[in-house]
Image 1 (cartoon, rainbow, N blue to C red):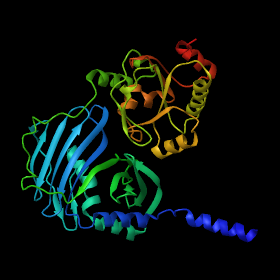
Image 2: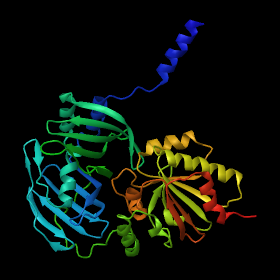
Image 3: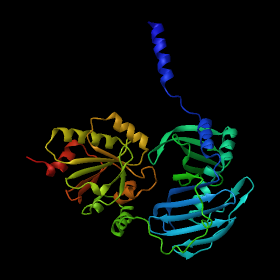
Amino acid sequence: MVELALQLLLLAQATVAPQPTAADVLRGAKNAIIGAQSVAYVVTRDYTDSSGNKGKGRTRVLIAKSPFGFRAEHRRDDGSHSETAVSDGKTTRTLTDGKPDQNPTFGPEGPQWSMNIGGNADSDVAATWHLFLDADYFQRAIESGRILYLWDDEVQGEPCSVIVYARDHWTDYFWISTKTGFPRATQRLSMSRGPTRLGARYEMANIHLNPQIQSDAFRLANASSANPPNTISSAAAAKMQESSGSASVSHVIGLRLPDLELRDPEFKARLLSDFRGKPTLITFWAPWCSPCREELATLEKIQANSNVSLEIVAIAVQDRRPNVLAFIQNHKEYKFFFFTDADMERETSLLGSFFGIATIGIPITVLTDSQGAIVDSWAGYDGEEVLRQKLAKFAHP
């Protein structure tokens, strides 16, 4: 009997996929980009402007290894737009909102290229180019012996392995796709002088190695006619600014649900404004939040055993998607519509700004009518009795 148990244990261990090593993950990344002479991709990251307002920026990048050159087009949520084009190590033209601008000059220097970080487009290129066009960078990291596999994660719904690479004065974090081997995100922790500083997380998507490059690809046309990026309405943006310093949730009462993006458990996109046609309760929660978990349990009880007629939508914020997906898998009794904030791992998201989540905390609960208008909202969880009283208006005979 003991011998049979040992055999079963060995069989179980053999069927469990071994955890990858940091070296194996980086070798996969190196192999994925070997032979790349050019690359096109999109960088997404948070930014803070000179007034302290936070938002999201996106940069479309096209870069060639030899002769060195790139073109980068940067757009922000506030509507600003800039482009930079570099050919043979010289800035050919820089435009900000369609107007010529000054910019540093970049150039290749031996096996590595240094870039003086200027505008936003330049910063995004400088932080990410080597992850696609310098396969030796990963080899040097492997040979350093200063790398470590941290955990599994997701970037924009794609499974990734997170690797940390410790340097002398900074530490780099890489999110490497387990499907393609491509780098999907990077973030730097600087420790050179003064306080330790965690930089922006750069996420890369729409990656294409060795795209066809036209002869004039690194020369800019007039950008004044460029189409502005999709943004939420100016009224919603104003409310988001107001909410950033608010200590209550009353600022959203009377507004309609905005056109802000969510992601379902399969990472399919959905707009918050789609929840119309029936009174809806929306709760913003996170797996680590004890009051949030208590509220979800109460909502499940109310949904199953009362005459309250409400759609229940649970939107996870301020955590990693794998943690959220694990929670959903372990609570199949919850018949809610589960979603995550499309930018839940960022310091600031449009969804979080609109409802004041970073300032107020979670859980935040929102009630809407059948037209998608917010009729009530509150922060915190005060127990089942209080919650039932708040939902009594939606009860039917």
